[in-house]
Image 1: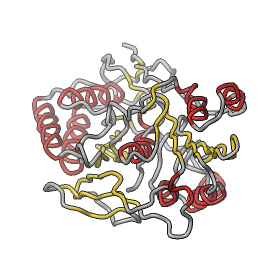
Image 2: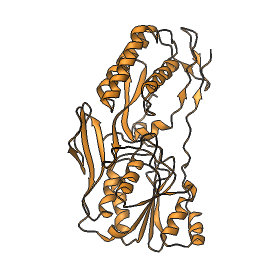
Image 3: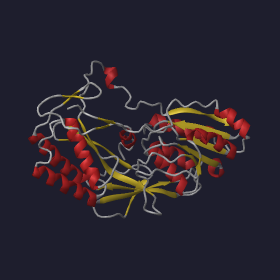
Image 4: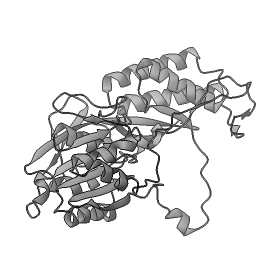
Length: 372
């Protein structure tokens, strides 16, 4: 399930306004950069290429056909011929798609210039700007705590998560802090869940367009799904060697920043009634996908799949996962500690020692108007 995390990253991107520039002239943006120009042929090519890629890979086949039909009709009618700014065309295409069917992940952007690479260390730089596990420790007798920023899906982080579960296997309560968790892969979840579930359990269902469905991965299996879609179940098998956490209380802390794979983890524990979710509704990034090239000057993020509750068929795209106990995100740890048996005075003292470096407030995308 590659690049599940990208959905979370895209939610924070800024949108660009659609004011029209004068044809064949560079456009000075509010940030002072120079916009690329686009001619009528490039605009039509971009729209038609975008239509084809959406038709082939977008998560909902019926919506994909509606997107494609609109783009082809607009390209044929010349609707994009007089948009000379790459930024303005990207915004117009995005707006047109969302008018057909709202999807916060579908976004067309001008291709960013690639920086030159001068040394090997730059090539090997981490692709995530966050430390995966920022803090882990005993907060109080019998109360274990771990805070995540991202699930990169690598063996080192997965091993660290398994080590945390085993080191804290005597816990009476365990608190997973997802308040600054931006998303990621399934591997880290698969290192957590076997120690929490006493029996084999289906967690969530994932639908991926058949044209881009990839090979199977651990603890994900195929099941019957609709035409054109590969349906899989994410499930857990209990540990056969370490069972002490099967009866432990489990709490998950959430904020509007908690996104994508963080929401997958949160929803899996919520729908199975294995954890109490405390905090604020999550970001609402339930679709996964990746950016692809369209035309010669643009990229588009295309959601190719979605994760949902197999009991209801509903996902959390655009709405987020609602907490069981609604409190401001900043107060969620205190609430979890109190529910773990810690006095409120002591809980507040402990909370003051926990200092996440990431924000718990979701940045609202801003529109940058172009100049005439």
